[in-house]
Structures are given as structure tokens and as C-alpha cells.
Amino acid sequence: MNTERKTEEVANGAVQLAPSILAADFTRLGEQVAQAEQAGADRIHVDVMDGHFVPNISFGAPIIQSLRRVTRLPLETHLMISDPDFFLDEFVEAGSDSFLIHWEGNNNLHRTIQRIKGLGKRVGVVINPATPAVVLEEILLDVDSVLIMTVNPGFGHQHFLRTALPKIRRVRQMIEQTNPDCELELDGGIDAATAPLGVAAGANVLVAGSAIFNDGDGVAAAVNRLRAATKLAVN
Ligand code: DX5
Ligand code: ZN
Image 1: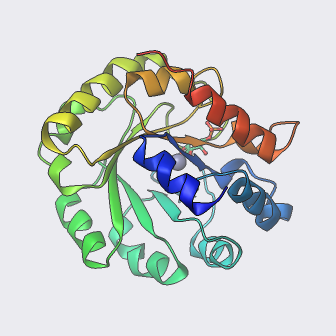
Image 2: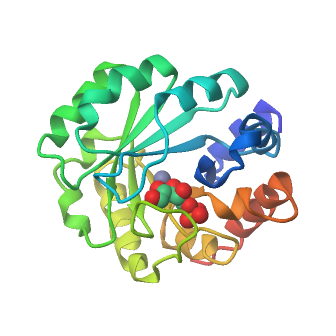
């Protein structure tokens, strides 16, 4: 997809797609990310898990460093780790363009957000399924995005929690009232069936792992299918 067309799509409020490499074939990671980029993906979502904050371990900064060499897409780093502050410099050095930081378990969220901004990177706040929208009230003005988890964090290939839909609608209203440029992103269980529901509720960025990297027709076909599905949203 050429840059001009992409700029036009963003200006028209097109939904952005963020393939999550958690579901990729790691023996062909560079190749699969390049396919996603060519098919028009907007950013690459990198799920970092430490086995403490969530009951799973994934990967760390070296993966970002390798990806930085094979794609020009922004690398979005979803930190599902205890003490995110401790690792920020390392991820910035590796090539992260933005960070998604959980509200849960972070007693110094405002400080973490300011540190990320001080490093010149974009920052979003993430809330888990059981966390109410209201916790965002005092932080919304300070962030570039809100990510609503539509599964419990830690694993790919889970079912989209439809109970998150009223919360997505509520957060969309909050964003319109206080910080209209803030993105509203969803993560977990996004596929061609659930994407239109999330978009209709107000999301404008969708993370998708298995729907993109585990599609038998290949990465490009999967990106196209998901892109088409986002256009089926009925408000
Ligand atoms: C879950 C991760 C997600 C995950 C999504 O903790 O944050 O980004 O990779 O995977 P799918 O799209 O398969 O639900
Ligand atoms: Zn994620």
C-alpha cells in the first residue's frame, strides 16, 4: 500500500490494524512481518510477558531489535511485566516506537507515562476485562491511546469477551469529551466476526494475533479479510 493512500485512509478515520507477533511462526518472523507490512498493516504489536504480571513468558527487547531491521512499521510494545519502568530504556534503545502500560499493579502510572513521554515515545494505558472505565478519568488527558483488553492478558487465541462492549462504548464517550485525538484500541480475540462489533462500539485500532498469523490462507489474505471486516461495522 502506498504512503499517500495510507495517509488518506487515516485521515478518513480508517481503523488501524496491529498484527501481534505472539501468534507468528518464529522461525519465519521477519518474513511474516514483511508480509503483514506489504498487505497494509499499520503497526506491529509486540507482547512482552514476564511470567509474573501474567502467567506466561514471551520475549524481550532482542526481538524488537531484530524486527527493527526488517520493517519500517511502528513497533508497539505491550508490556505485561512487573516494574515496566525498569526496562523502558532497553526497549527504546532496541527500537520501540510506543508503549502500552497496564493500569493494574502500577502504583506510579503517572510517573511511568511521563517517563515514556520524556523518552520521546507514544504511550497508551491498558485496562483488563475486570477493570472499570472510570479509572481512566484522571489519566486520559496524558495518553495517546487507551487499550481495552478483550481477553485476559497472557495468551493468544482466546475468545473475545463481548461483555467488554459497553465499556468500549463508555470509553469512546470519555475520549470524545476530554481527548478526541486519543486512540481506542482493542486486544484479544479480534477476528473477522468480532472486529465489526469492536469498531461499532468505538474502537479505531485493532490488535490481532491468531486471526492474522494462523490463517491457512496466509498473512496477506488474513490482513485483507480483517480490513474488509472493519468496514462492516454498523453503528
Ligand atoms: C494477549 C496479548 C494479545 C494477543 C492477541 O495477552 O496481549 O496481543 O497476542 O492474540 P489473539 O489475537 O490471538 O487473541
Ligand atoms: Zn497485546
